[in-house]
Image (cartoon, rainbow, N blue to C red):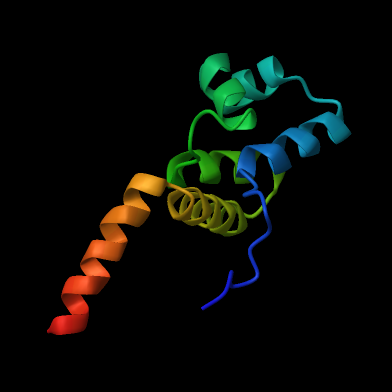
Length: 103
């Protein structure tokens, strides 16, 4: 099936959000305060160490007017690309395909 148009490196939605707040001159601490969440949560998302959830995507949408569904699309794409690079998962998938081929 090819790479389905995915780039070489997955883009975590936090990268996009980090660029957005830097462009606007908003600190991570101020954003965390505005959103009512711990600074560590914002920092971990913006640095790609924590996944974006539907709840946090909606909170970012409210705070920054960045569409939550676009952010969730990026997160899903990131998750899929990361999973596809997991060698142990790929070994399991190969075995499943072998079994499925005989059915």
